[in-house]
Length: 192
Image (cartoon, rainbow, N blue to C red; front, top):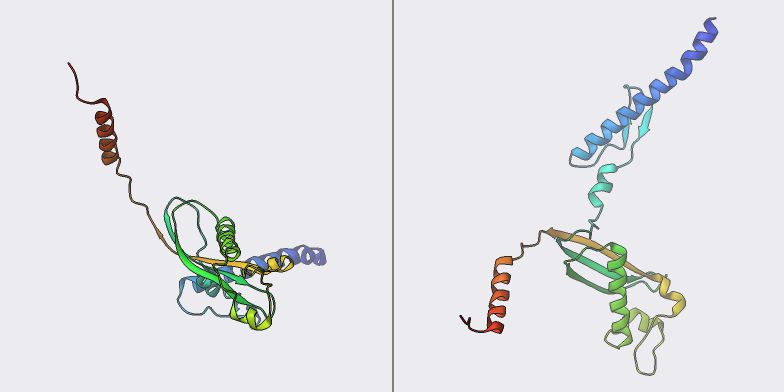
């Protein structure tokens, strides 16, 4: 009988210990996020000698770039178009832009890459020096260069939203007055 009682208690004790370890780890993680500096890499649970590994959550959150391009507010965005093929890695284009429309990272990246490829095709972008040295990316007779079709998969896009700003309210009253004046000018003087 005693054996059966212990057999029933064992899974319950293991579950209770597991929940306790989980709660302590989550509390330590929360403390690490709320405190400046590096979180502890090892946390002791129940003052036991068995360390439990804790991921450096604070560091990860701190280093995440803002990539939210949604909404109607103004967003200042820094971006880079890169080429990632081994031994030919270069930044193809970079810049900052004010985005005043609702979009997402993939759409914004596709737009910027399309603009870049159009400029390359028009001969407005010089070939990177590394590519000249390595004799990479063929040059067409009209002196515009292009990336080989099979290597276009190495084009990458990185971006970061530097700042969000609310948009100013529209000046409806002024617009209405302008429109009313236009209508009045078209009608002409009022006749009785």
